[in-house]
Image (cartoon, rainbow, N blue to C red; front, side, top):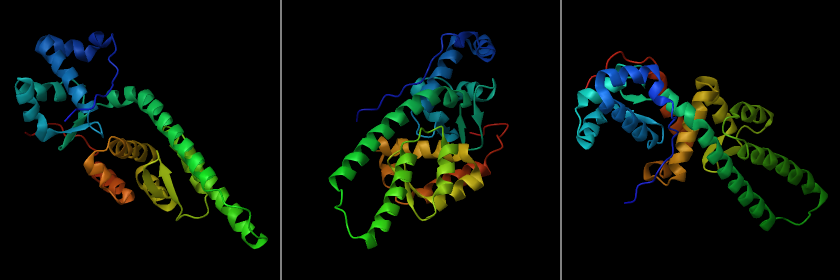
Length: 244
């Protein structure tokens, strides 16, 4: 099966980073190579995290010791980790412009589809008794379209739009694939915060767009996001040591 290729930025000044200088001093260029191998691996994950239990498999694949990989992850402040996973905050931050550009492109494509679909299914004018309902429906749809067309970083603006939607049972479409009711979105943001909800929504939509079987099989997107966010909340405090 052909494996998708993903982009992540590699800055030419990386070699002068104080943490990486220390890494090279202790582990040499092998440690430097392991560091970028780890970044490549994290980039391939839909949530940009990798399980601690998978380190031994990486060691086998890369022909290095698991102790060296563990040292790169834990000893130089290059990665965050808890008892289950490890990840790179810097990688996620550097990826944001690329993810936002991809998100805008998908939103624009989705908006074009919505417009074409709306034109194809346009209804003739009806009697005055139904006119108000049609007008109200168009207003609600326009709000949903606005939400669909929002850039991923502007979840605060999306949140503001949702507050204006009177029908909290209205189904919203994020990135053209992630379905949430307005009240469900409110509940997630109130409990976990906008940034956490944004990151998990990006992960879910990315998995669906990439047609990963596990993600496309999800029916209740609210329940999926709730479970992911709840697990992260339980493991917010990084562990001091990885246990293999």
